[in-house]
Image 1: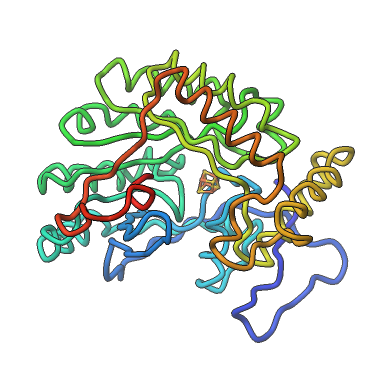
Image 2: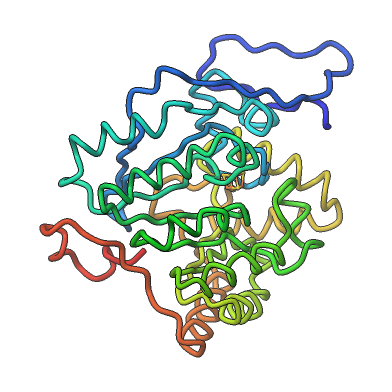
Length: 332
Ligand code: SF4
């Protein structure tokens, strides 16, 4: 394991530095027993209200670009190796979710499993918290969306086939060689495509998330990724440009990038700065979109192959009053 590396936590008054070599990191699992609610409501300007479920905090997959790293800082941990090795399992998640839905089912049109962790990180094989929460959703006839990088999702085929559900696989890189500098401990891309095929052959709606796009690194892979996803039965797809929601995430990403891709790092950083008017971080939500012709070309490339291959937009189920929203706000 690598040595402990965490950017300073902005929510803590004091921080400490090791004198000399820091210790190696080790995996620690904590069980949270006092979870009060399992549904988190958030609002995104382009997507409206979102209701998300996460049975774990932290993620062993350790993607260097992960925007969920900042949530670990709310617990007093670091956004670096702490996020990857101090994992919290919400062991009462299924019971709490059942109680939440008993009170709020009518107000919630759709639940998304993801955004603060991968719902199928390796610990899920033992804890089965995501599985049990899906069973709760089935009991309440709750439509769900799942985003994962893990083939472990195929274990739950028996429940997924009984749900109104869409499973997106996050696959931004076509090969292990391109994935490894950014996705340190994730299942390799081919394994994710195989899992996608298994689900689609069982009749589950599947999609590909080509996110993040790192301009100059994987934008040219968009057509090949869409082709492979199509072959594996995907009918939905989306892309997102890489974004950094906090200084600590930016700091950790840059450090790992320079370590893993020393000859390409500065080119990637400079291109990303051009998208953000000279900074790596965006200032407002609207600034998260790219600004240069290079990003425009990436979007056009995606749109062209999206249409050519017959992909569909993903429209999440809505509450009745949301049906009047303009089209852009309804698209996933
Ligand atoms: S799998 Fe998802 S949640 Fe986990 S580190 Fe990667 S991007 Fe973050």
